[in-house]
Length: 304
Image (cartoon, rainbow, N blue to C red; front, side):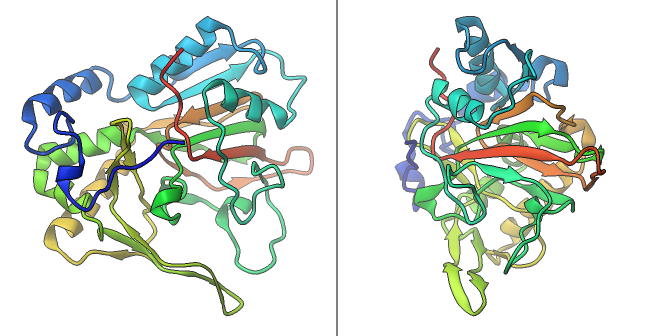
């Protein structure tokens, strides 16, 4: 399971890391490698998969290459006859994604069946047809239970709508740091963002969670916890924090900087918890949207 470094001080980040603000040369080199294809085309992200239970070396390498460059890939199954949930588990294991996050509405196998349903207690938007604002998954989790990897598999798309927008977290980091390193310092502060406690029927089912927006994982890669929600979120009260949050909102509002995809049956997203949202959608009697979502404490392995 991927671990986070201690973000209470910049000294916790490896001295050679491009994410140490004083390490300009390493940052310039890392930035150059990312900027070559900072906004991938949808076609470039797609990898065709013949058998999800046994990926070929070429298929696996293609997914790894895209996740290394963009933190995400989109797979397309050639055989749509089998849409069993077990294929999500099988794909995950082949990329060393094993440790699943069992959340409040997930199924017994810790994979969530995202569809419109009646909910008792608090209403969670992923299980409605409403739009979802920009976020990374598990931004409300404890820091030792962060979501690093996601697989989202489409069994049936909605009759209309349900479009996802995706953005690589590295692109946000680069834009903020290029504008002002003080924005990165603010977003890496251990008290940058607080999500208040989740209370249901008077009982606290999740304590308030405070932590940075940007963190560096033990493997040296970047991680982001973020939500564009306007209510039930507390940002650290500094000018740099407010300006950085505003800039993130502006970047996410620019459709030229994001990838748009309406998943069809047999397609899926495998990613290192990139920023994403979802438009509202409408089901019909003949076609009701169903997605399988697996959230992992592991990111996509970069070994083939």
